[in-house]
Length: 254
Ligand SMILES: Cc1cc2nc3c(=O)[nH]c(=O)nc-3n(C[C@H](O)[C@H](O)[C@H](O)COP(=O)(O)OP(=O)(O)OC[C@H]3O[C@@H](n4cnc5c(N)ncnc54)[C@H](O)[C@@H]3O)c2cc1C
Image (cartoon, rainbow, N blue to C red; front, side, top):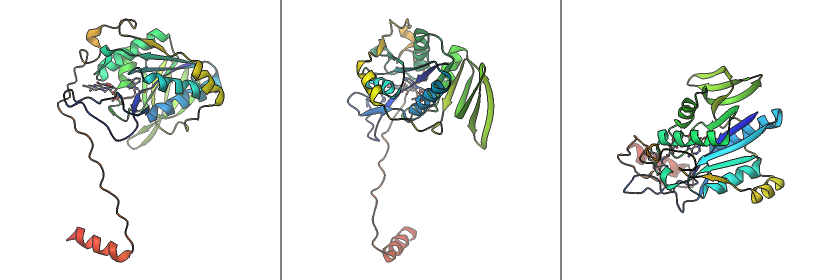
């Protein structure tokens, strides 16, 4: 089974800086990690490859520094990577992001299965998976926490508001996955050696054959009206005894 994982690099801490003019996240110079849900998607892909054979590719759209995240995916076992990177992609909303990613999928070739995270922990829209499947004309199942392969299909279990449901989906298909799909493995020594030799393939807007009007800010109908950095939580207070707790509760209740 040939599997593609879409992986997004996100800021690693709560110290998110916002550009006051555009309202977008300043990603340059910010410590970054793979979106946690995407590392679970990668783990699920590697487990399926171990059972069924095939390849695992990883696709990302982002700044050139995302190549490090893709190399880390190789260290964990991915076979192939592609990074869509160009100033023309900057400022993309989900419509423009899914457009660019759909061209990345075409550049890499056909896949039996595409895995996305349930959502990105910075953008948080959970729209990319469904939008990408729509653009590719393949079925999509969201919030999947268990995958069982069958011939030409998968039986998957997905979270719902009031429990879970089981769905049979024909391949090729796209799934968005939760954290329950296995603990992401550590890089192996062989994998690290391979990742050091690995050249991350990159494509610019022109090389991907993208229409610049459909990319980045130009291709984004979503307008951010205002943004605000999250408020830090209050400092924790250590209480010496129950008496102090009673005093504190009295102050709060009065
Ligand atoms: C108006 C607007 C302007 C923006 N400007 C910028 C900007 O200047 N710079 C910037 O970096 N971001 C910007 N963003 C945010 C960025 O484009 C979104 O993060 C992106 O559209 C994905 O949406 P999301 O984070 O909500 O992903 P979700 O839909 O929550 O992500 C679900 C899954 O889709 C996949 N996925 C999402 N994004 C990517 C990606 N880039 N590459 C590979 N896989 C991916 C991952 O598997 C992820 O787990 C902007 C968003 C808006 C609305």
